[in-house]
Length: 159
Image (tube, rainbow, N blue to C red; front, side, top):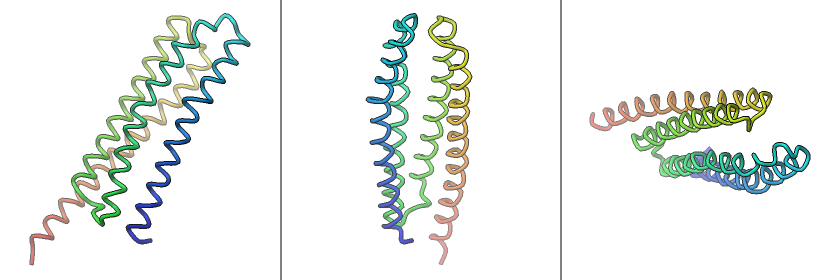
């Protein structure tokens, strides 16, 4: 696959993630939360705090999509192994780790405030694990892209 085609496919996937995320965060979660609050009136007071908390977890996800778009643009310029991409991947790793930590801390706080159910807390631990896995993968890729960029710079300097 050509670099420009690969870049276009990556950008389309990222745009799809952005649209799907907007649908989930701004339509599915409010509807499900309202239905949950109607079905369990004792948890109706938790609707807005949880919704705002979940919306806050979306912010790092969309910043990550911005960095992914930057990486896709560099791939389209046939500059896959660059320091800029390594830095973007490192930023993605930091955002994923920070979001996972924030999500975990928020769930623990809501559990202590009696605004969370233990079963939801256990499911959220799986989500936290996925966030940590994404952070680890992005950190590894950042390291590899950085090493490849350094090797490429050294090879560009030789005749």
